[in-house]
Image (cartoon, rainbow, N blue to C red; front, side):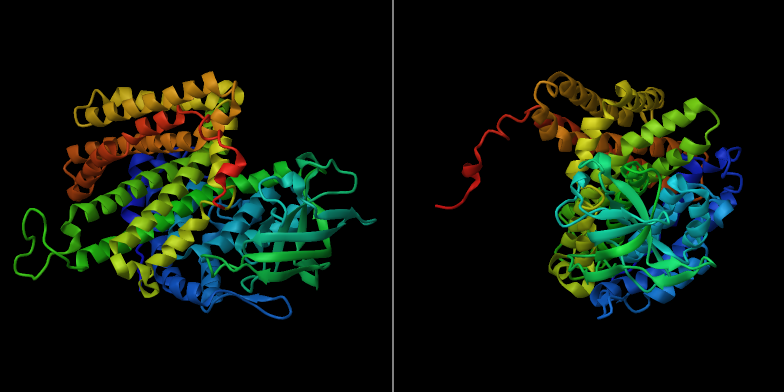
Length: 601
């Protein structure tokens, strides 16, 4: 059976030393985020996820969710008890507004809990994760009455939430939705249509589920400009604000999925269900994007989460499994064979996983801090910079993070050899669960096009120029430090590849937009490689300073320095190869006629 131990030491390193989160104590929401509070949250969240959620991950995958004849759904054994414990411990309220019952702590700390939860049990983490997105949209677009009616119980976790976008005939192109919203005399709407792929769409964990549903009102433009967003509760609230009459929304079936079996991904049928408009008519997509952007950061974190838990188990197996002898001679002559940990190819996979995980964790926590600073930084200039940077980085965190997270899970299965292909060892579940993160909340191809087609040119390229300056400044400073200069030089070369790729797009994509589409995936990966290189430089800088003080856990900081050097050697050179692929353009990619793809005789 696989195991999970939350990476609390590395998380504290990023929060307390690299980001120095406690130094933001003068900002709203950060007042109580002292180092003692940070350490307590990190350690207790790690303990909860490791001891409560991880043990029911494999059993939940095997059992799955069950739909009953009346359309109700029950989650796997132990999930209801675990969810109640999650709510009672206050993990749901951590970064939520105090006015609605939250603790008002920084979003950065909530991101820690999200990572640990997704590593321990990704399917479980999706239930509160969807609620977080729904409550964020309600907070942003709801009327005071709507906020008062729904937010307090969604924030505590007593009620849950969903996002309903996809329909059988449309996914990313939401202008094609057919769900209708007919206005009623009392100001409500009757919602009719079918939504598919609705994560946590029906379950037994909470007493009510608040669905946020995209639909079109009569006469609305037949495009994405005609979409409105509606609150459709599973149970309509009575005069006391409690769940009352059952609404006209039912689970038609549970999708039979490759992974995340313990999350009830539903087909939801709306049959004149009572709904209430959230935000303005025909402006539903803008409100829903509040949910989608939050969800994309959370999905990027899932890439890290599955990479981390699979890596931990890969290391355990590599230290235990004996096969052959080390190439440089027996590592343990008294034994009949050496642990496979001594073989360079196994080390390659483990080191690739280690440096991705630690670099990606630094990126995700920094990204969460930018979300906080977007709202709470002292000056408008600082708030704008944070907003620019996290807007630019969101598709990279989601797209690159989940592409690489899946690769790592695959490699950790490979470490197990034949045992990795056998269900009881648990590695194949990590691969299956990691796969969905590359698809939902906008496929990674969509993320790449969002980055290259929208974000790079947005506001005259302000965000990408800020990104380049941030890294250039860090490189310039690091070059003056002998311990960091080689890493800085290698990062500078990789950044130069990204700048050249950006310029190539500027010179060629306007004349032929297919050049942009053909190179977007490669550009997203170049930017992911460069960004993690930037965070490895920052981690090395922090570790180098710590080593100068002769710390007790010297080995931890020395490992950081070695890992940074490994990343520079093994990951940063890929930026050049990807740039050359990007600059090949789209001509040959798009040249063949459709019939040339047929394999028929």
